[in-house]
Length: 128
Image (tube, rainbow, N blue to C red; front, side):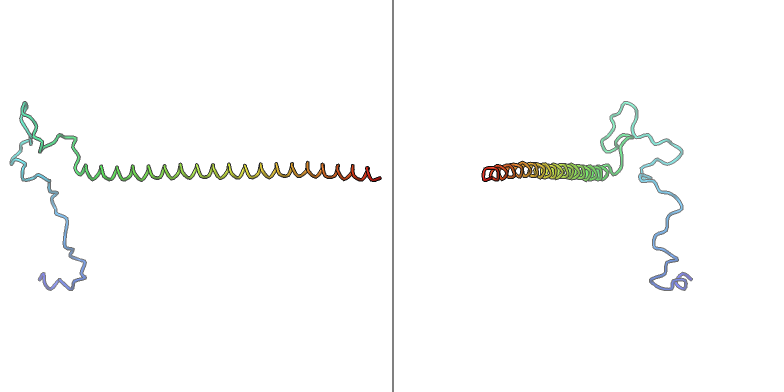
C-alpha cells in the first residue's frame, strides 16, 4: 500500500523528515529513570568542568563571533561616517576660501580701476 501511494520523486505529500510527536531532550540518555530530580552533583562535591553552571549558553562561541562581526561592521560604519563628515567639512572650507578669494579679487580690481581713472584724470588735467 505504501508503494502505491508513492507517485514520483517530486511528491511533496510525504516529506523526508517529519517532526516527532515527542520533543526530545538533549541528554535524555543521562537522565535517571523514574520520578527523580536530576541533580548534577551532591552538595559539597566540586562541579565537574564538563557540566558547566546554569548560566552557560549553548553556542556561545557562535554568538560571540556574531557579536564581534556586528561590532566590527558598526565600527567600520562609524569610521566611514567620520571620514565622510571630515571630507564634507573640508570641501565646505575650500568653497568658502574660494568665495573669499573671489571677493578679495573683486575689491582689488575696484581699487585698481579707481586708481587708473584717477591717473587718467590727472593726465587729462596736465595736458589741458
